[in-house]
Figure 1 (tube, rainbow over the protein chains, first blue to last red):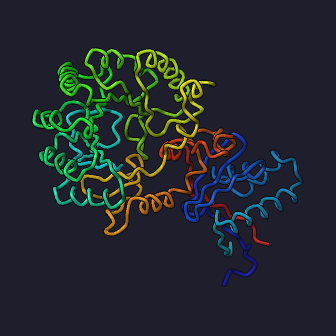
Figure 2: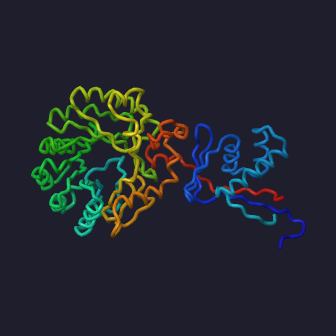
Figure 3: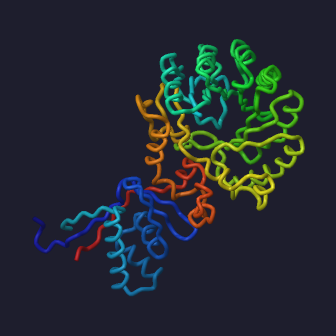
Length: 99
Length: 320
């Protein structure tokens, strides 16, 4: 049981066996676990790059807003939707917990 | 064909070698015979003996006899610094079934006695010997080989190899950023070789885009001849384990299968490393027409691995 009023957090981790290469037009994610490749164009590639560099969620939102020229709300929605799609693709692992 | 590395002992210390091992080991006779069984079970008609320096194996002449007595053809990969019994053994082997590829040292990069030793072996083996050169830096040029072929009466063929990295990149290797410089140089050299009637063979890892436009057509080589050379070769190591190829050796190995053949094993290795195939050695590989049309595999997998990034990142988001 979490503490009353504690913020719920979803932690996303890079799945083991996932690596990537920088390509001319984005990134290519390679999953040795399922032998699948996932090319990322803009702006998804920018999001993966920011995550891989260890930025916090707030930093990612701030930088993605500057990159994608979206509102704060739209940026957060984009990040959440994109990361969920990566969870479905086996590229990220999601763990829910109380903050 | 199959590569059987019968020893990892060597009498040279080439900086680019991807087969060096801290603990030299010689393949035993039963292990060698089991390797030959595997070769024959796979329907292959040629055995290639590698090292280390394979002629240093104390049973080298016996191994040669064993290969030839099974009706197989033989190709030895050597640095040319052979013990006398090995040279005599190869001199007396039937020339149409036993050949030697001698990877020569670049002038100035070996000791004088090594240079003399190589020349002595080459002179004695004559047309049984084909020259090979491993290009480990853009400054390594094959031009001097034409003089050796002419002066020593060697087979009019040169096998060119790119020094590939081990996945741990602990050896000296030719970085793909230099491939186009090397390709330009080789295109010029090919003209001189052709003029002397010397054929060029390209080992694995070359890519069509490293050569200047028009070169492949002029040389009568198709893009896929060059670009599809990266596939599981199957190298049998001195301890009789099988690896996909030497550069990828540290990633995965398997024992020689009791009942299956090389095709079965190649499929296993191909499946094991298939996830890497979409990455090529260059950033431009992903959008390359030659790859899309199946004429190029994107170069050496070990070099492609050198481009991989990994980071165990984690980020927490407010949930809901």
